[in-house]
Image 1 (cartoon, rainbow, N blue to C red):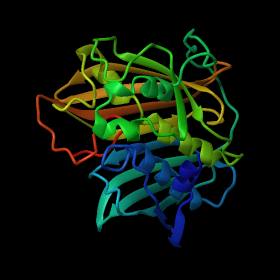
Image 2 (image 1 turned 45 degrees about the horizontal axis):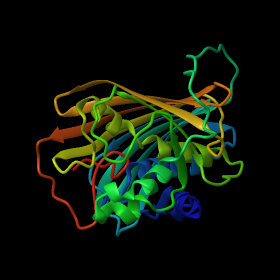
Image 3 (image 1 turned 90 degrees about the vertical axis):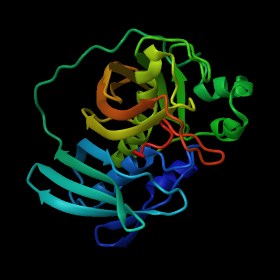
Length: 302
């Protein structure tokens, strides 16, 4: 949890310029959810009004991120209006943009309300965590990945549907998991939005592969996020349980599309996500020692 808070605590270098640290989750490259979350924090820091909260983010992954170098975020304060503020963020490494974000912030207003219903699924209590399952079946994990995939994590996931690491049984293209941070985040709304942004990059591309009996860690599968969008509908806490429902309606042309929805335990729909990813099969990936690419494991296009 301390590592996650460190990732979100950006260093201010100059006006509208920030620097962020990296965390290796076993991909050999920067996790896409990390730069998404850090870019959101950088954008919010340039807004003076306390009542502006992000309502939408749209990010494009441009280049693979280097874990050994910090990421510098340049924020363009595009517009500050009476109700909305718009920001553009470029994430830079080695003089090149690796990620670009557009974000919009809105002051709180009252209006009409409706939402889709939450799925009727078991609550998180009593479900094993993904990490517990990983550790219980660690012998199925390749030795080069075993240590990093069984390490402690800042986000706890509890899958609703039973699963095993590297299971290649074809399944329907959907996934449900409860998630929350493993410790308290405090009361700053941007930290809760950033933590959800970080977590939202897990699971989408693997869900696209479910019907094909493949995983993002297969040696002949190249998987990388191309873009990622988030919409925040209501206030929420990322240190309380949220249900993440993911479905993939289509895959075609070496690209797969997935969309997700986040619900509180009370059934409130608080955020939505969408992502398109590159999914090439039948190719031999170049692999760094001790690394793997894939969903939730890199996020940047090759």
